[in-house]
Amino acid sequence: MENKQALTLVSLEFLNLDEIEKYLSHNFSISINSKKSLSPRCLDFEINCLNEKKFFKSGKKISIYNLPWGKIGMTICYDLRFPYLYRKLAQQNVSFISVPSAFTLFTGKLHWHTLLKARAIENGCYFFAPAQSGKHPGHIKTFGHSLIVDPWGKIICDNKNKDKIFVKEIDPNIVKKARQSIPSLNYKK
Image 1 (tube, rainbow, N blue to C red):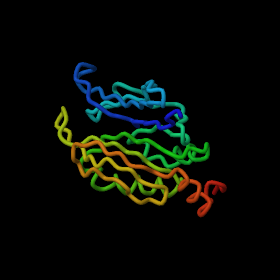
Image 2: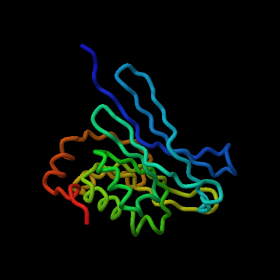
Image 3: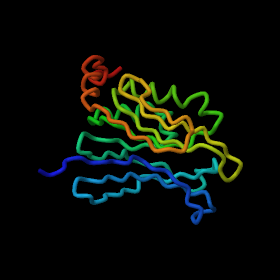
C-alpha cells in the first residue's frame, strides 16, 4: 500500500545576507509529496529595512496552491491590513492561509494576534503564520510569535519566540463546519 502522507512546509522565511544590501528576505513554500519529491515555489520577497517600496512593487494577483487536503492562499504580513484580500481567498474555497511575517515589536504587540484571529474567524480558514523574532540589520526588532489559528479564532499553537519547529495535526473538516455555522461568505454587504 502506498504511503499517502504528505508534508507541507508553509512559507518559510529566512534572511539571505548575500543578497540586496543584506536585507533581502525570501518567503518560500515547499511541498513534499508521498513520492518524496519537492515542489518549491518562490512566493514573495520582502525587505526587512522598513523601506520595502524602494526595492519592490506590491503583487497584482492572489496566489493559491492546491494541497492534498485543500487549497492554500499565500499572503505576507502587511496583507493582514486588507481584509478583502482574505475574503477573495475564502470565496475561492481556500481552507488554509499562510502569512509569513516580520511584524515590528511595536505593531506586533498591539495587532498580531488580534488581526490573525479576526481574519480566521471572518473567513472560516486556518491561518499558518511563521514569524521572525529578534534583532535584525538596521536596528529592527521583530515581534515573532509564530502561530497557527483555527477557523474559530482559537490559537492552537504559539511558539512564544522560541526557536523551534512545531508540527500540529489539523482537521480540514473544521473549515466546512465553521462556514456552515456562520455562512457569511454567501453574502455581500
